[in-house]
Image (cartoon, rainbow, N blue to C red):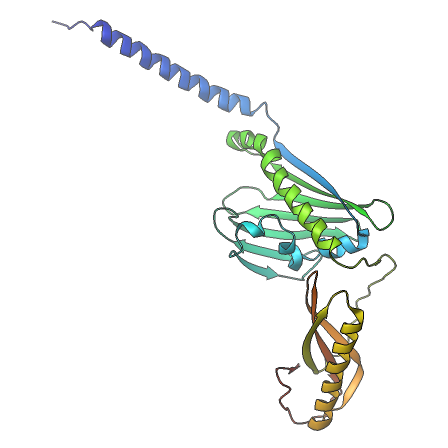
Length: 287
């Protein structure tokens, strides 16, 4: 004989049916509602920096300096970085690998127009299409700039579209932090007007050079002149003792530049007379 369900069993069955119906409804809302959401997400943040557009551009267009103002670098200082291509301008590429806070991915400059814009593309490991970011630099009075950092990404699939609702808060906060760091970095440097400067690329015959490393306070022009003078003097003395012929004007190669210290190499070009290769106390001859 068939058994009859008890009232308790009937109640449990009804609750199970209601729960299943609710899950189906939520799934439909999740999927169908996603198609009502935008298929792209964007964020834009701005800051006024008391430095000329050309000086701002020189920093943001140099990918080797990105971590000096990046909002993510302090989250994982031990992350690893690998650079490809030129230091600045189109083609400059940075790969990073870090902890969960920063993840892994690739940042690449795809276009830049001095002194007004730098366009980048960022691909996050494990995500779909890369995102686009754009830095716009506009004059904001004498010696000042309005810097706007924009982010735009396509959202494919329901999950990505719902996630896009969170981007203005998460990415926006990071962009605010990054722009604040950029402002502090630039305003700690001496104000330099680069607007009238023109840069030309010129192919030159390769020569050996002798170099010596040194450093001096960024803001102390006299100290820089003294250190460079001493280094050039040591280079000339070494060349004379080694039978090397010096050709061309003195050169200076920047190794690093922070708000307090300029680290550089003083260099002289060797004119092609073969001499003995002596010890220059940590300096070297570069082919």
